[in-house]
Image: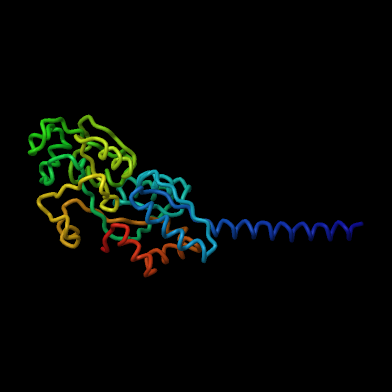
Length: 273
């Protein structure tokens, strides 16, 4: 009887060992990515290339760069996609939580002001942009357009694009206007409203809207545009260095070093740093 109980106990211990080992392996094969709506489409393509050969499950959510950083600080994600530099307040919060933020530079993106294709305005100065988003210029006629009020479209506070735009173009307080949550929602809104102005990542430009040249920088010449456009930002991946191991580390290295991924990054509308 005692031998039987002993064998059962040993069997139970062995079963539990393999069960916990399987769980650990499953968790190791899951990568949670959160953050920027700008980087999300590119990262989904990278994940699709990576998942099949590596048999890794990758989940991607895009609440915005700030939302992604909040998720990392709360332990709800492994990698943050960010279209802005890490804010000092988040550096402090991370330090207080014992999290050591490690950054990886993906490349460079341009933030482009856009209008409806029917809008007569095609070029604008940086100072005029500041006056529009600061509430000093309110009518398109002041810019050579129709006699119509300008509706300045904003991004919400979770947006890394908004953080960069606000730093370069406008103070923290905005005049009344529409606030939207993503590049795609700004595109759709501008495409439907002849008097609206918004701003998006260069990667999202399409034929349904018209990008404005800023200070006469030639949009047609990509290299010149990249070099001289006054509203640009770096794109990052952030991780907790304490958790930078296993599949997370392998995926980051793949994203930064794989030749096809580098090509995909440029084809997505971004620029090498």
